[in-house]
Image (cartoon, rainbow, N blue to C red; front, top):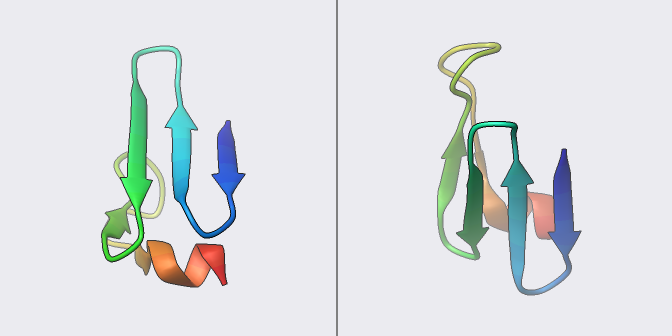
Length: 45
């Protein structure tokens, strides 16, 4: 599950962890579609 906070951050939660990403960072997949990257700024656009 992920939560999107426009203009601020993206929070991703899994049963094992919680991760927060902010503008300017690049997010990479860890389990599905290995090698896929997306800029947090694109998610917030």
